[in-house]
Amino acid sequence: MRQTWREMMSVVADFLQITGWLGLTASVVYGILVWLVGWLTPVPWYWILVGAPFSALAFLAAWNWLVVLRRPIASSPPLSFKHSEWVNHPTYYVWVAAHLWVNCAPWPYIPADSPAYPALQKIKSAIEGGQIKVMSGSGNAMSRLTREELLKLAQIHNEHPLFLFPK
Image (tube, rainbow, N blue to C red; front, side, top):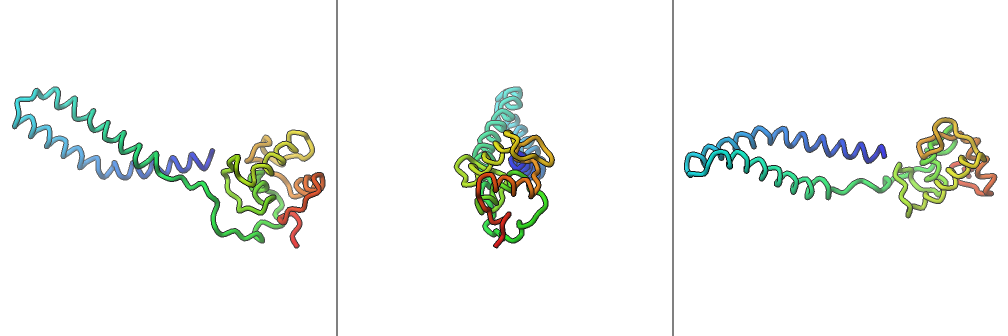
């Protein structure tokens, strides 16, 4: 959830930067357009003042859908992954431990088709079942676990993840 919030705020910041610079230009162009149409045609000013903002809103809605909503979100882990950087840490987040359990680069987003998803479910069910205890948090993916608790879980399942048992 945090990554999605950060990405959305980044998109909003980009949008505000663009509209900040374009806002003044658009206001001037709008004013000139209204003046020209009002001066050169017998169209009532009321319809010009009401119609132009609605057409601008329709344009911004279409632009928002095309540019912002269809923008690809970074949903894949980084390409470089050094396993040695994750060995012998005293604590791990649950989502980090789930990725490292299956030798994947840690990435905060774990979809159901990810290879780390079964490991995440295994860790969370062990927390909920009382087999291991969290250091902090409520047992969700952002909770922290000690290395000793992860070693206990590995012993329970008779597994040897590389980040807990380096060669």
